[in-house]
Image (cartoon, rainbow, N blue to C red; front, side, top):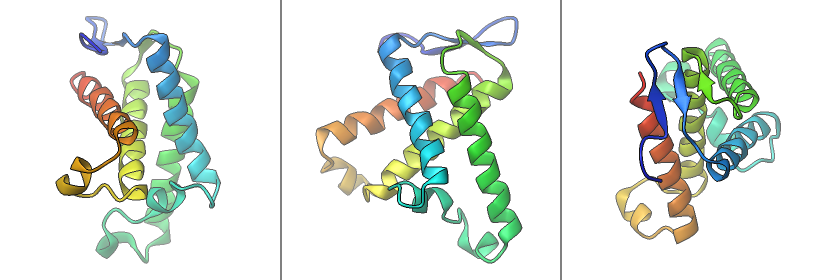
Length: 143
């Protein structure tokens, strides 16, 4: 993937310069996050719904519900806008949050929680992780 995948334009929109294959990968990521939110048997469901800081909100159902609502809303908005050439700030932020959630869920589900484990990860999973990181890196540069 040469060049920037996302570019901030003068009119304040974010231009999406992702090819069809990249858009399909993003679509798959967004669908997996939406599916994991709704399906308790999905491999990402537990990491997706785990407290980010257990000491803060483990016993606080309101904090958990708010986080779950944000994840679902962002993933749904991301999926709905995956074919757009230009994104508003809210849409770009939804993409960023959803890809972050997908990366975290992938790492937790596969136990890739250290540099040592990352170094021994199978090539296909490693490529998926690096691709999500590239999307995040380029998209975060627009904020």
